[in-house]
Length: 374
Image 1 (cartoon, rainbow, N blue to C red):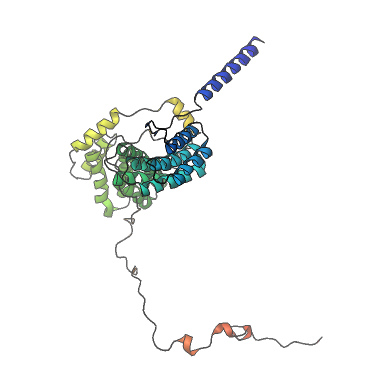
Image 2 (image 1 turned 180 degrees about the vertical axis):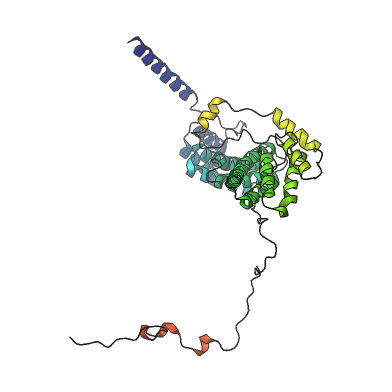
């Protein structure tokens, strides 16, 4: 009985705390307010719309902002009003709201490319797809779109204050894309499909050097090449040498050196820049907690704690390469496609159209049997 009373009291207290927190967090401050103190009618409309956005009255806010834009077409607050419309859609959320927000941000960048807020709008477009990104073993649509949008910010607004944040998001997005490739290559390697494994792992190692498991990918890549015959021995040695040179603090570095010595290949020196970067990553790595491991099973978004915190991410989209097991200039294969103009008399000109013949006159048709009277 005492236990049940305590349980009821605990539940009541929990509900009260949740209600208090929800009431306190109901109004979320707007990130880009206009601090100018004036009673101009267009500013009054803008302030009213911002107040509605903060109170989650998004539809009312958009009506007010559109009224401002259509009524005061020379207002100094036009750009801010257009940006606020996009922000209202992003705050509303949902797949429809995110799609509308992206379209509005793109329009803002198109009309006001020189404003500082244009870089912020591009960063929010990147964030829209980043927040919808799924785990490496699922659909990579939003991850690839987030990669393109973050890269666009770095190209179009390289000196913006939003560039460092976009660069970090790009590293985390590429961590997810690289993990997807690594899982495919590791699967082929485990199953003994070494040409397929080498194709996946080679592209991964070349395109995503900041990947947290790039050294492991190179180790499996060297092993796959070594099992594909003597023709690929040099490629296996190159993979092992890259571990020693570019990932000197890797747990695979000593084994890679032993492989090179066994293959009678030179052991390269560690790159000091790569050594410093890897040391920085190890010192700034945050170990995931037990709770994050538990909740990670139920989360839709990927875990990007292992993503690099330094280094320049890849600035080109990943494209699968031709497998090295395919011989160059294979006999009997010609990739050239040619077209010539038909001249002279052809069968189409000299023979009747077969489609105009009755079925009984088609080539190979059985002759019709005469009908018999019963």
